[in-house]
Image (tube, rainbow, N blue to C red):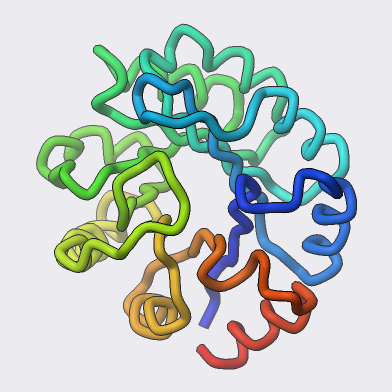
Length: 219
């Protein structure tokens, strides 16, 4: 079974960011997940454009940039110019008047277009855009802060999207409150990747190699 493990870098030790990136790379992390927040779309600030550029300069591993910002169409070009072919940009559909226009900018730049959907966002409201994105990042917690509780009702949303992904050619990803039991349940169902934060990866006092190996062996 093939699935991806993604490091939520807002949870990393920023006192030793280069060391963190190097250790995660050596452990075989599949991508670096970068949370960009503007304090308006979500009531928090996380990583910056300069943090993204720093990490992009330290590794060739793919990057997933999650824009939790109002009107991403106004600033998405800044992020596009800081990334490489094959990297992903996710936007929230509620944050933009015309989200498909922003997604088209990502596509035209040769990057991977993605939608991030909140627990309260229905699949029906994004149905048409599923034809043009390659990734759907399903939030199992409300966006903006790490360490939240899993919203159990989101499980049905994963199942609905998984039933559509083959026909509409996209993959489903998990973000928020990711624990081993969630990976064991949803990876066999077809969820392609899981963003790992403080529940599984960071602040455990163990090597990333050991943690990632244990996850992969358990599933």
